[in-house]
Each structure stands twice: as C-alpha cells, then as structure tokens.
Amino acid sequence: MISGFGTSLLYKSTLGTNAMATLSDGLANILNIQYETANTLVNVAMFIPSLSFSKNKMGIGTILMIFTMGLYINFWSQAIAGLPEPSSLFSKVIVNLIGINLMSIGLSIYIKEDAGLGPLEIITDLIRNRLNWSYGKSRLLIEGSILLLGILMGGVFGLGTVICVVSVGLFIEFYIRVFNKVFPN
Image: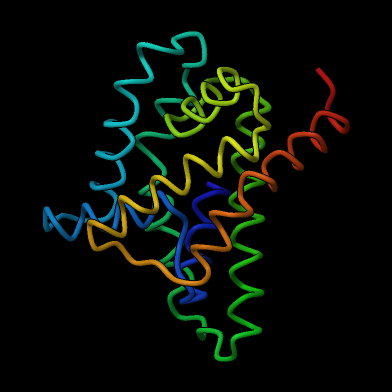
C-alpha cells in the first residue's frame, strides 16, 4: 500500500513514473486495458520465469504484490486526484522524490518481512546473487531494461522516471539497512 502511494505521487509529479509503471502503461496502451490489469499481467509475466529460479523467495507477499499493486496505485491516484499538481520544476522534483522514497520504504518493508518477494524483487535478487553485485546496481540493471521495454511499448516516462530508475535501488538498499538496524531479526 505504501509503495502504491509512492507510485501515485510519481504520477502526480507529472515528471514520469517508475519503470514498472512505464511498462504497465505501455502494455495498457497496446492492449487497450486498464492500468491495474496491465500491471497484474506484467507481474504475472515476470513471475513465471521466477518460478524456475527462486521458489524459496516466494510466499504470500509474492501473491499480494502481483494482484494488489495496480489496485493500490489506482486507489491512491484517485484519492489524491483533487490535490493541485505541482507547478514548478522544483516542486515536481520534490513530489517525485517523496514518491520514490515512499515506494522504496514500502518495498523495503516487505523485503525485510521475508514473506515472499514480488517478481521484480526476485529477479533483482537473482542478479545480485549470480553477479555478486549490490542490490542497487542489480536493481538499476533491471529497472533500466524494464524502462526501455516500456518506452518501446509507448509507456509514459520523463525526467522523474530516470531519477526513479537511477535511485530506487539505492533507496531500497538504504532502507533495508535502516530497518535491519531498527528491527533486527
């Protein structure tokens, strides 16, 4: 729910969304379907190959991520629709950064809880382990690849999308460290 709120703020900033949202937007445009349906289809499409590589990373969190993220994004987007859009580039960047932080906090919480990872987090974890990379670097590779595919499909993107792609993995890595210190196992 927190990540969905963060993503809705990315939309509100009008600078662009995250890579998964760009891909979901592109798929929604191509198939002429609602965003949450496209988001679910993207998550399912990423989930299927994850089954082969990381069954031990799946759980109730995996299912919840696949089937609720699009719903939360739509809910929060409608809830904040009446708020004024930021007008200056500075205010747009601030709203975008708040959105990225909230999205990263939400993802970090559910990664920390170890109740199952979403497909994107499973693939990131797989790359991290196979290449012995940091979470931030692994996430950048995945986010960049997804963004490129989303752009090719006509998904919405902008400066905020680039900021998100470059920073979200680093923010997630940071918040996981914070949560591990504050809430040790």
